Length: 95
Length: 304
Image (cartoon, rainbow over all chains, first blue to last red; front, side, top):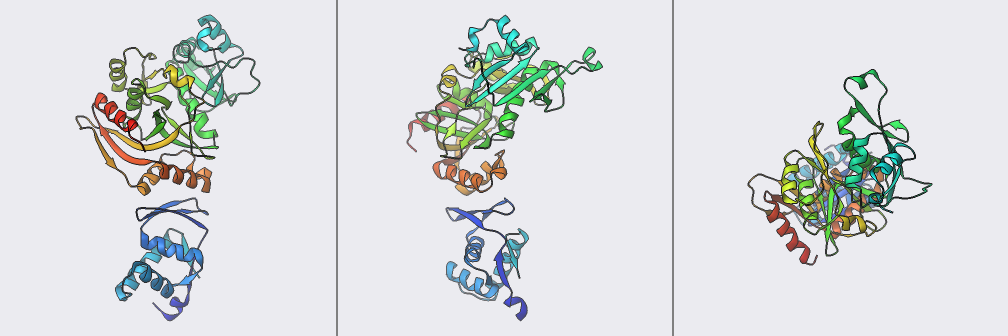
């Protein structure tokens, strides 16, 4: 990740509604009307972004804390992939 | 006054002229037709429904009309009109009553938006309603027909109406649609029930309708509390078996089976979520109807 890219912030594209059952999240996107079934890591990122925009580093940190795991290089890469997936679903966007 | 109070002649005459105002669940349906076969089936399957006399309002105005094309001399057809306009392409005339039933389902699923409408049968016993969402061919209607012939109340064979205001289920008991082998199976299972004459070569194969139980029609104004969502699957020679379905996966399947989930927006999401919260969710595989009914009876006696 370049330094410039790391400074860009992610934000949600529209307000989200959540329901959670047994660790699986249903997320409703108010702009598209789409509904998604997501795991806890993806939901954690969206819940964080629902509170406020954040950069990748901040999100990695928040997710590592939430999941109680070590924030190593592999974790950062996985989180980056997850953010890209959420962006491809048009749930979040990076500015 | 019930439909059964009319003579066949009076019924046919009303249908031909001013039309019949029928109370089906919460909706008043105004039906007109010149087709005697439709009148006969209404006399047979809607005998216990209330007639609304001198009605100034109907929720749906429908009629079955004969297209005035040259084709009528060779292969006669029938049109389903909604508010005077054709809603679908015409069908062969012998499918007129089936078309009325399909058309009435369409009226509700396409125009009612104070309920979340799920493509599902709903039955109730001991105050607990069970929603049976399933795609065509899953044995949903067969199972539903079997249950309502063994003491379960029919709320609907096709459309689960979930009130967005409080999550209760509004009954819409109408004739149960049966297809292909299910017709003979159900005629053996419930020899006292009334069935329309089977109609062959429809888009769904051979189709017949079974009357809704009289008690279910009489209780059509009593909403029910959802207790379980069961996804039925008929599988030849399979043992009767339940498997728990996680609530999140049940949510997605219910939303997929809902006609107006997207249209309702956040309200659709909230209504579905509250429904899932209120229900236990299972997959249910069966082949033997008696065993299936016995299993459901066990469920109805256990508290949710």
